[in-house]
Length: 115
Length: 114
Image (cartoon, rainbow over all chains, first blue to last red; front, side):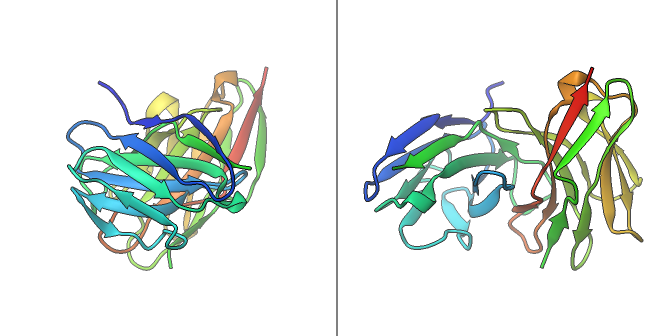
């Protein structure tokens, strides 16, 4: 079956611009996670959705970052007024249920470069 | 707070030799531990997990990991390395609470030479 997909694979933008990153999870997975991976680092948690609601957004670095999952499947991570420090690979993952011990399946990521 | 540490930035091993990639953890409560592998320009792929039960966990591609509670370790192992095993390996621990979010180590690059 299809895995987690993310679009675009690469995004180059200018400082101050707005960007949207999309994640399409595995069909039937109710839990969806966003992580950010900076160069040479492990992924860091941003936000977790169980269904349509953001159950934990404690990893979002500031209020420029926002994410939605309006129908409980596709999710969009939105970054306003981008800064050079936002440059990283943004990873999306889904699992059958959240709050459990199920493994998470990761997408290939979106590489964001802010010039 | 939950955390994991991968003390080696890089591990080099000859093809056919056994490999070990180290991971230690610090948790409050029971540890739920995972190993993932990342190939260039690809997402993380799940290898194996420890939730409870046998201390030796078997996973994908011939990998296994040994859970050691007294040493708070969860080292990844393979009896005979392949060149194709060369990749970036991440150890992770499930965070306390009910979200299932993962806390990752810094990663270890495994280089298998022919």
